[in-house]
Amino acid sequence: MVKIITVFGTRPEAIKMCPLVLKLKEQTEIECVVCLTGQHKEMLYQVMAAFGVKEDYNLEIMKDRQTLTTITTSILEKIEPILKKEKPDIVLVHGDTTTSYAAALAAFYQQIPVGHVEAGLRTGDIYSPFPEEMNRLLTDRISTYYYAPTKMNADNLLREGITDNVFVTGNTVIDAFQYTVKDDYAFTDVALDSINYRLHKVIAVTAHRRENLGQPLTNICQAIKRLATEYLDCIFVYPVHLNPAVRETVFDILSEIDNVKLIDPIDVLDMHNLLARSYMVMTDSGGLQEEAPHFGKPVLVLRTETERPEAVEAGTVKVVGVDEETIYSEGKALLEDKDKYEQMAKAVNPYGDGHASEKIIESLIRSCRY
Ligand code: UD1
Ligand code: UDP
Image (spheres, rainbow, N blue to C red):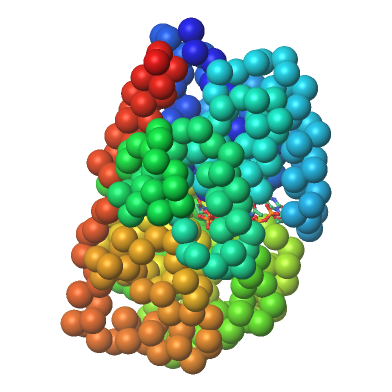
Protein backbone atom coordinates (compact mmCIF):
# COMPACT_ATOMS: atom_id res chain seq x y z
CA MET A 1 0.00 0.00 0.00
CA VAL A 2 1.33 3.45 -0.98
CA LYS A 3 0.37 6.30 1.36
CA ILE A 4 0.00 9.73 -0.21
CA ILE A 5 -0.81 13.00 1.54
CA THR A 6 -2.21 15.67 -0.74
CA VAL A 7 -1.76 19.16 0.69
CA PHE A 8 -3.59 22.21 -0.64
CA GLY A 9 -5.21 25.32 0.76
CA THR A 10 -6.50 27.84 -1.79
CA ARG A 11 -9.38 27.86 -4.27
CA PRO A 12 -7.40 27.18 -7.46
CA GLU A 13 -5.37 24.38 -5.89
CA ALA A 14 -8.57 22.72 -4.69
CA ILE A 15 -10.21 22.98 -8.13
CA LYS A 16 -7.20 21.25 -9.68
CA MET A 17 -6.51 18.75 -6.87
CA CYS A 18 -10.05 17.53 -6.15
CA PRO A 19 -10.36 15.62 -9.46
CA LEU A 20 -7.05 13.91 -8.63
CA VAL A 21 -8.12 13.15 -5.05
CA LEU A 22 -11.37 11.60 -6.29
CA LYS A 23 -9.40 9.31 -8.62
CA LEU A 24 -6.75 8.52 -5.96
CA LYS A 25 -9.51 7.42 -3.62
CA GLU A 26 -10.69 4.86 -6.22
CA GLN A 27 -7.28 3.10 -6.20
CA THR A 28 -7.01 -0.07 -4.12
CA GLU A 29 -3.22 0.14 -3.81
CA ILE A 30 -3.16 3.77 -2.64
CA GLU A 31 -4.20 5.33 0.66
CA CYS A 32 -4.95 9.02 0.04
CA VAL A 33 -4.97 11.45 2.96
CA VAL A 34 -6.21 15.01 2.36
CA CYS A 35 -4.65 17.84 4.37
CA LEU A 36 -5.95 21.38 3.89
CA THR A 37 -3.80 24.23 5.08
CA GLY A 38 -6.84 26.49 5.19
CA GLN A 39 -4.90 29.36 3.55
CA HIS A 40 -8.35 30.16 2.19
CA LYS A 41 -11.60 29.57 4.05
CA GLU A 42 -14.96 30.26 2.34
CA MET A 43 -13.43 30.17 -1.16
CA LEU A 44 -11.82 26.81 -0.42
CA TYR A 45 -14.88 25.26 1.23
CA GLN A 46 -17.00 26.20 -1.81
CA VAL A 47 -14.77 23.96 -3.94
CA MET A 48 -14.65 21.08 -1.45
CA ALA A 49 -18.46 21.09 -1.32
CA ALA A 50 -18.78 21.24 -5.11
CA PHE A 51 -16.59 18.13 -5.57
CA GLY A 52 -17.85 16.39 -2.42
CA VAL A 53 -14.29 15.90 -1.13
CA LYS A 54 -13.79 15.65 2.64
CA GLU A 55 -10.50 16.53 4.28
CA ASP A 56 -8.73 14.47 6.95
CA TYR A 57 -6.90 17.49 8.38
CA ASN A 58 -7.37 21.25 8.21
CA LEU A 59 -4.61 23.47 9.59
CA GLU A 60 -7.03 26.46 9.51
CA ILE A 61 -4.27 29.02 9.20
CA MET A 62 -6.18 31.83 7.42
CA LYS A 63 -6.09 35.26 9.00
CA ASP A 64 -7.61 38.50 7.75
CA ARG A 65 -5.07 40.34 5.55
CA GLN A 66 -2.51 37.61 6.15
CA THR A 67 1.13 38.05 5.21
CA LEU A 68 3.37 35.70 3.26
CA THR A 69 5.44 35.18 6.41
CA THR A 70 2.53 34.12 8.58
CA ILE A 71 1.17 31.79 5.91
CA THR A 72 4.57 30.11 5.60
CA THR A 73 5.41 29.83 9.28
CA SER A 74 1.93 28.70 10.36
CA ILE A 75 1.96 25.90 7.78
CA LEU A 76 5.47 24.77 8.70
CA GLU A 77 4.57 24.58 12.38
CA LYS A 78 1.16 23.01 12.03
CA ILE A 79 1.90 20.37 9.39
CA GLU A 80 4.98 18.87 11.05
CA PRO A 81 3.13 16.69 13.60
CA ILE A 82 0.79 15.43 10.86
CA LEU A 83 3.66 14.38 8.61
CA LYS A 84 5.37 12.70 11.59
CA LYS A 85 2.21 10.83 12.50
CA GLU A 86 1.11 9.80 8.99
CA LYS A 87 4.60 9.02 7.59
CA PRO A 88 3.43 9.16 3.95
CA ASP A 89 5.50 7.76 1.08
CA ILE A 90 4.89 10.92 -0.95
CA VAL A 91 3.51 14.39 -0.31
CA LEU A 92 1.65 15.82 -3.31
CA VAL A 93 1.43 19.60 -3.67
CA HIS A 94 0.06 21.75 -6.45
CA GLY A 95 1.18 24.80 -8.38
CA ASP A 96 2.64 27.99 -7.00
CA THR A 97 0.92 29.17 -3.85
CA THR A 98 2.63 29.72 -0.52
CA THR A 99 0.75 26.63 0.68
CA SER A 100 2.51 24.58 -2.03
CA TYR A 101 5.95 25.87 -1.17
CA ALA A 102 5.57 25.65 2.62
CA ALA A 103 4.12 22.13 2.44
CA ALA A 104 6.95 21.01 0.14
CA LEU A 105 9.52 22.49 2.53
CA ALA A 106 7.87 20.80 5.52
CA ALA A 107 7.97 17.46 3.69
CA PHE A 108 11.62 17.99 2.86
CA TYR A 109 12.39 18.60 6.54
CA GLN A 110 10.91 15.14 7.22
CA GLN A 111 12.83 13.68 4.24
CA ILE A 112 9.59 12.73 2.50
CA PRO A 113 9.66 12.90 -1.32
CA VAL A 114 7.47 15.58 -2.87
CA GLY A 115 5.43 15.23 -6.06
CA HIS A 116 4.67 18.56 -7.74
CA VAL A 117 1.45 18.70 -9.72
CA GLU A 118 1.49 21.54 -12.31
CA ALA A 119 5.29 21.66 -12.27
CA GLY A 120 7.46 23.69 -14.63
CA LEU A 121 5.43 26.87 -15.26
CA ARG A 122 7.67 29.93 -15.52
CA THR A 123 7.57 33.63 -16.36
CA GLY A 124 11.29 34.16 -15.74
CA ASP A 125 10.62 37.15 -13.45
CA ILE A 126 10.75 36.35 -9.73
CA TYR A 127 8.64 39.42 -8.92
CA SER A 128 5.87 38.67 -11.39
CA PRO A 129 3.66 37.00 -10.45
CA PHE A 130 4.70 37.65 -6.86
CA PRO A 131 5.36 35.48 -4.92
CA GLU A 132 4.16 32.66 -7.18
CA GLU A 133 7.17 32.54 -9.54
CA MET A 134 9.55 31.99 -6.61
CA ASN A 135 7.12 29.58 -4.94
CA ARG A 136 7.12 27.31 -7.97
CA LEU A 137 10.88 27.57 -8.49
CA LEU A 138 11.52 26.57 -4.89
CA THR A 139 8.88 23.83 -4.96
CA ASP A 140 10.48 22.37 -8.07
CA ARG A 141 13.91 22.48 -6.39
CA ILE A 142 12.55 20.49 -3.46
CA SER A 143 10.46 18.00 -5.46
CA THR A 144 11.38 14.49 -6.59
CA TYR A 145 8.46 13.89 -8.98
CA TYR A 146 7.23 16.43 -11.55
CA TYR A 147 3.82 16.38 -13.22
CA ALA A 148 4.15 18.97 -15.97
CA PRO A 149 0.90 19.94 -17.73
CA THR A 150 2.56 20.59 -21.12
CA LYS A 151 5.76 19.82 -23.00
CA MET A 152 6.71 23.51 -22.72
CA ASN A 153 6.55 23.16 -18.92
CA ALA A 154 8.70 20.01 -19.05
CA ASP A 155 11.21 21.87 -21.25
CA ASN A 156 11.43 24.65 -18.65
CA LEU A 157 12.43 22.02 -16.08
CA LEU A 158 14.98 20.47 -18.44
CA ARG A 159 16.55 23.91 -18.96
CA GLU A 160 17.03 24.11 -15.19
CA GLY A 161 18.76 20.73 -15.16
CA ILE A 162 15.73 18.80 -13.86
CA THR A 163 15.78 15.67 -16.00
CA ASP A 164 14.54 12.78 -13.85
CA ASN A 165 10.96 11.86 -13.04
CA VAL A 166 9.40 14.53 -15.27
CA PHE A 167 6.02 13.39 -16.62
CA VAL A 168 3.89 15.35 -19.10
CA THR A 169 0.34 14.71 -17.94
CA GLY A 170 -1.94 17.53 -19.05
CA ASN A 171 -3.58 19.81 -16.50
CA THR A 172 -6.10 18.41 -14.01
CA VAL A 173 -8.22 21.55 -14.56
CA ILE A 174 -9.46 19.91 -17.76
CA ASP A 175 -10.40 16.83 -15.71
CA ALA A 176 -12.49 19.13 -13.49
CA PHE A 177 -14.91 19.95 -16.33
CA GLN A 178 -16.28 16.38 -16.20
CA TYR A 179 -17.68 17.22 -12.79
CA THR A 180 -18.76 20.82 -13.35
CA VAL A 181 -20.06 21.66 -16.83
CA LYS A 182 -23.63 20.88 -17.91
CA ASP A 183 -25.70 22.09 -20.89
CA ASP A 184 -28.86 22.45 -18.80
CA TYR A 185 -27.08 23.96 -15.80
CA ALA A 186 -29.12 26.18 -13.45
CA PHE A 187 -27.06 28.82 -11.63
CA THR A 188 -27.07 28.88 -7.83
CA ASP A 189 -26.16 32.56 -7.72
CA VAL A 190 -29.31 34.67 -8.15
CA ALA A 191 -27.58 37.41 -10.13
CA LEU A 192 -26.20 34.87 -12.61
CA ASP A 193 -29.53 33.09 -12.85
CA SER A 194 -31.32 36.33 -13.75
CA ILE A 195 -29.15 37.08 -16.83
CA ASN A 196 -30.46 36.38 -20.34
CA TYR A 197 -27.28 35.00 -21.89
CA ARG A 198 -28.73 35.07 -25.42
CA LEU A 199 -29.63 38.75 -25.21
CA HIS A 200 -26.51 40.19 -23.60
CA LYS A 201 -22.78 39.89 -24.14
CA VAL A 202 -21.58 38.72 -20.74
CA ILE A 203 -18.00 39.51 -19.81
CA ALA A 204 -16.55 37.53 -16.91
CA VAL A 205 -14.04 39.58 -14.90
CA THR A 206 -11.72 38.62 -12.05
CA ALA A 207 -8.61 40.24 -10.56
CA HIS A 208 -6.87 39.54 -7.30
CA ARG A 209 -3.10 39.19 -7.76
CA ARG A 210 -0.85 40.67 -5.07
CA GLU A 211 1.28 42.55 -7.65
CA ASN A 212 -1.90 44.15 -9.03
CA LEU A 213 -3.07 45.58 -5.68
CA GLY A 214 -3.08 49.39 -5.67
CA GLN A 215 -2.69 51.36 -8.90
CA PRO A 216 -2.84 48.40 -11.36
CA LEU A 217 -6.18 47.23 -9.91
CA THR A 218 -7.45 50.82 -9.98
CA ASN A 219 -6.52 51.00 -13.68
CA ILE A 220 -8.28 47.70 -14.39
CA CYS A 221 -11.47 48.89 -12.65
CA GLN A 222 -11.40 52.28 -14.40
CA ALA A 223 -11.10 50.57 -17.80
CA ILE A 224 -14.04 48.28 -16.99
CA LYS A 225 -16.06 51.28 -15.83
CA ARG A 226 -15.47 53.01 -19.17
CA LEU A 227 -16.38 49.91 -21.16
CA ALA A 228 -19.53 49.27 -19.12
CA THR A 229 -20.79 52.84 -19.41
CA GLU A 230 -20.16 52.83 -23.17
CA TYR A 231 -21.59 49.37 -23.94
CA LEU A 232 -24.85 49.29 -22.06
CA ASP A 233 -25.99 46.02 -23.69
CA CYS A 234 -23.02 44.20 -22.13
CA ILE A 235 -23.09 42.79 -18.63
CA PHE A 236 -19.82 42.65 -16.73
CA VAL A 237 -19.95 39.91 -14.08
CA TYR A 238 -17.23 40.33 -11.49
CA PRO A 239 -17.12 37.81 -8.61
CA VAL A 240 -14.93 39.78 -6.23
CA HIS A 241 -12.18 37.94 -4.33
CA LEU A 242 -12.62 38.10 -0.52
CA ASN A 243 -9.28 39.84 0.02
CA PRO A 244 -10.28 43.17 1.67
CA ALA A 245 -7.52 44.97 -0.26
CA VAL A 246 -9.17 43.85 -3.51
CA ARG A 247 -12.74 44.56 -2.39
CA GLU A 248 -12.02 48.13 -1.26
CA THR A 249 -10.75 49.19 -4.70
CA VAL A 250 -13.29 47.24 -6.75
CA PHE A 251 -16.38 48.36 -4.83
CA ASP A 252 -15.11 51.92 -4.63
CA ILE A 253 -14.89 52.23 -8.43
CA LEU A 254 -17.50 49.83 -9.80
CA SER A 255 -20.38 49.57 -7.33
CA GLU A 256 -22.73 52.19 -8.81
CA ILE A 257 -22.85 50.85 -12.36
CA ASP A 258 -26.01 48.94 -13.36
CA ASN A 259 -24.42 46.62 -15.90
CA VAL A 260 -21.49 45.70 -13.64
CA LYS A 261 -22.57 42.87 -11.31
CA LEU A 262 -20.23 42.78 -8.34
CA ILE A 263 -20.94 39.50 -6.60
CA ASP A 264 -19.28 37.35 -3.96
CA PRO A 265 -17.00 34.55 -5.16
CA ILE A 266 -19.13 31.96 -6.92
CA ASP A 267 -18.67 28.24 -6.61
CA VAL A 268 -16.76 26.42 -9.32
CA LEU A 269 -19.94 24.95 -10.83
CA ASP A 270 -21.36 28.43 -11.37
CA MET A 271 -17.97 29.70 -12.57
CA HIS A 272 -17.34 27.04 -15.21
CA ASN A 273 -20.90 27.28 -16.51
CA LEU A 274 -20.61 31.07 -16.58
CA LEU A 275 -17.48 30.73 -18.73
CA ALA A 276 -19.34 28.42 -21.08
CA ARG A 277 -22.04 31.10 -21.56
CA SER A 278 -19.88 34.23 -21.58
CA TYR A 279 -18.71 36.39 -24.51
CA MET A 280 -15.17 36.96 -23.24
CA VAL A 281 -13.04 37.00 -20.11
CA MET A 282 -10.91 39.77 -18.56
CA THR A 283 -8.72 38.45 -15.77
CA ASP A 284 -5.40 38.30 -13.96
CA SER A 285 -6.12 34.72 -12.86
CA GLY A 286 -3.90 31.85 -13.87
CA GLY A 287 -6.59 29.19 -13.90
CA LEU A 288 -9.01 31.17 -16.05
CA GLN A 289 -6.35 31.43 -18.78
CA GLU A 290 -6.47 27.65 -19.02
CA GLU A 291 -10.22 27.26 -18.69
CA ALA A 292 -11.66 29.93 -21.00
CA PRO A 293 -9.81 28.73 -24.14
CA HIS A 294 -11.43 25.32 -23.66
CA PHE A 295 -14.80 27.05 -24.15
CA GLY A 296 -13.57 29.15 -27.10
CA LYS A 297 -13.79 32.42 -25.14
CA PRO A 298 -11.20 35.15 -25.78
CA VAL A 299 -9.20 36.12 -22.71
CA LEU A 300 -7.58 39.50 -22.04
CA VAL A 301 -4.92 38.91 -19.41
CA LEU A 302 -4.66 41.85 -17.03
CA ARG A 303 -0.99 41.31 -16.29
CA THR A 304 2.34 42.13 -17.90
CA GLU A 305 3.38 38.50 -18.43
CA THR A 306 2.09 34.96 -18.33
CA GLU A 307 3.48 31.58 -17.35
CA ARG A 308 0.86 30.02 -19.64
CA PRO A 309 2.02 30.91 -23.17
CA GLU A 310 0.29 27.95 -24.84
CA ALA A 311 -3.08 29.63 -25.46
CA VAL A 312 -1.36 32.94 -26.29
CA GLU A 313 0.48 31.15 -29.09
CA ALA A 314 -2.78 29.60 -30.21
CA GLY A 315 -4.31 33.10 -30.39
CA THR A 316 -7.12 32.80 -27.80
CA VAL A 317 -5.38 34.60 -24.96
CA LYS A 318 -3.81 38.07 -25.16
CA VAL A 319 -1.61 39.63 -22.47
CA VAL A 320 -2.67 43.30 -22.34
CA GLY A 321 -0.96 44.59 -19.20
CA VAL A 322 -2.36 46.89 -16.52
CA ASP A 323 -2.53 50.26 -18.25
CA GLU A 324 -6.09 51.72 -18.23
CA GLU A 325 -6.04 52.96 -21.82
CA THR A 326 -4.72 49.67 -23.24
CA ILE A 327 -7.22 47.52 -21.33
CA TYR A 328 -10.05 49.81 -22.48
CA SER A 329 -9.01 49.77 -26.13
CA GLU A 330 -8.37 45.99 -26.23
CA GLY A 331 -11.77 45.41 -24.62
CA LYS A 332 -13.44 47.81 -27.06
CA ALA A 333 -11.80 46.06 -30.02
CA LEU A 334 -13.21 42.69 -28.97
CA LEU A 335 -16.68 44.19 -28.44
CA GLU A 336 -16.75 45.98 -31.80
CA ASP A 337 -14.50 44.17 -34.27
CA LYS A 338 -16.26 40.96 -35.26
CA ASP A 339 -13.29 39.61 -37.22
CA LYS A 340 -10.91 40.20 -34.36
CA TYR A 341 -13.35 38.51 -32.00
CA GLU A 342 -13.79 35.50 -34.29
CA GLN A 343 -10.02 35.12 -34.66
CA MET A 344 -9.68 34.80 -30.90
CA ALA A 345 -12.91 32.91 -30.17
CA LYS A 346 -11.80 29.44 -31.08
CA ALA A 347 -11.81 26.44 -28.85
CA VAL A 348 -8.22 25.71 -27.95
CA ASN A 349 -7.05 23.26 -25.36
CA PRO A 350 -3.32 22.79 -25.02
CA TYR A 351 -3.83 21.44 -21.51
CA GLY A 352 -4.67 17.80 -22.04
CA ASP A 353 -7.47 15.35 -22.67
CA GLY A 354 -9.17 15.42 -19.27
CA HIS A 355 -7.22 12.37 -18.08
CA ALA A 356 -4.33 14.11 -16.33
CA SER A 357 -5.27 12.57 -12.97
CA GLU A 358 -5.03 9.02 -14.32
CA LYS A 359 -1.64 9.80 -15.88
CA ILE A 360 -0.35 11.23 -12.60
CA ILE A 361 -1.57 8.17 -10.70
CA GLU A 362 -0.01 5.78 -13.21
CA SER A 363 3.36 7.56 -12.83
CA LEU A 364 3.00 7.63 -9.04
CA ILE A 365 2.38 3.91 -8.83
CA ARG A 366 5.28 3.17 -11.16
CA SER A 367 7.62 5.48 -9.20
CA CYS A 368 6.71 3.80 -5.91
CA ARG A 369 7.20 0.27 -7.29
CA TYR A 370 10.70 0.84 -8.63
C1 UD1 B 1 -3.62 33.17 -2.95
C2 UD1 B 1 -2.31 32.73 -3.61
C3 UD1 B 1 -2.35 33.05 -5.09
C4 UD1 B 1 -3.60 32.50 -5.75
C5 UD1 B 1 -4.83 32.94 -4.98
C6 UD1 B 1 -6.06 32.29 -5.53
C7 UD1 B 1 -0.28 32.95 -2.27
C8 UD1 B 1 0.77 33.84 -1.74
N1 UD1 B 1 -1.22 33.51 -3.02
O1 UD1 B 1 -3.67 34.58 -3.07
O2 UD1 B 1 -1.21 32.48 -5.70
O3 UD1 B 1 -3.67 32.99 -7.05
O4 UD1 B 1 -4.70 32.55 -3.62
O5 UD1 B 1 -7.22 32.95 -5.16
O6 UD1 B 1 -0.26 31.77 -1.99
N2 UD1 B 1 -9.73 35.71 2.19
C9 UD1 B 1 -10.91 35.43 2.87
N3 UD1 B 1 -11.53 34.23 2.63
C10 UD1 B 1 -11.06 33.30 1.76
C11 UD1 B 1 -9.88 33.61 1.07
C12 UD1 B 1 -9.22 34.80 1.30
O7 UD1 B 1 -11.38 36.23 3.65
O8 UD1 B 1 -11.68 32.25 1.58
C13 UD1 B 1 -9.05 37.00 2.44
C14 UD1 B 1 -8.29 37.03 3.78
O9 UD1 B 1 -8.40 38.30 4.35
C15 UD1 B 1 -6.85 36.78 3.36
C16 UD1 B 1 -6.82 37.50 2.03
O10 UD1 B 1 -8.07 37.24 1.42
O11 UD1 B 1 -5.91 37.26 4.29
C17 UD1 B 1 -5.70 37.10 1.08
O12 UD1 B 1 -5.62 35.69 0.94
P1 UD1 B 1 -4.20 35.02 0.50
O13 UD1 B 1 -4.38 33.54 0.40
O14 UD1 B 1 -3.10 35.51 1.36
O15 UD1 B 1 -3.93 35.67 -0.91
P2 UD1 B 1 -4.68 35.50 -2.28
O16 UD1 B 1 -4.64 36.79 -3.00
O17 UD1 B 1 -5.97 34.82 -2.08
N1 UDP C 1 -13.22 30.71 -9.75
C1 UDP C 1 -14.36 30.33 -9.05
N2 UDP C 1 -15.16 31.31 -8.54
C2 UDP C 1 -14.89 32.62 -8.68
C3 UDP C 1 -13.73 33.00 -9.39
C4 UDP C 1 -12.90 32.02 -9.89
O1 UDP C 1 -14.63 29.13 -8.91
O2 UDP C 1 -15.67 33.44 -8.18
C5 UDP C 1 -12.33 29.65 -10.27
C6 UDP C 1 -11.88 29.76 -11.70
O3 UDP C 1 -12.79 29.11 -12.56
C7 UDP C 1 -10.54 29.06 -11.68
C8 UDP C 1 -10.00 29.38 -10.30
O4 UDP C 1 -11.12 29.77 -9.53
O5 UDP C 1 -10.69 27.66 -11.74
C9 UDP C 1 -9.00 30.47 -10.38
O6 UDP C 1 -8.71 30.88 -9.11
P1 UDP C 1 -8.02 32.26 -8.79
O7 UDP C 1 -8.27 33.22 -9.86
O8 UDP C 1 -8.45 32.60 -7.41
O9 UDP C 1 -6.49 31.86 -8.70
P2 UDP C 1 -5.34 31.64 -9.78
O10 UDP C 1 -5.79 30.66 -10.79
O11 UDP C 1 -5.03 32.98 -10.35
O12 UDP C 1 -4.20 31.15 -8.96
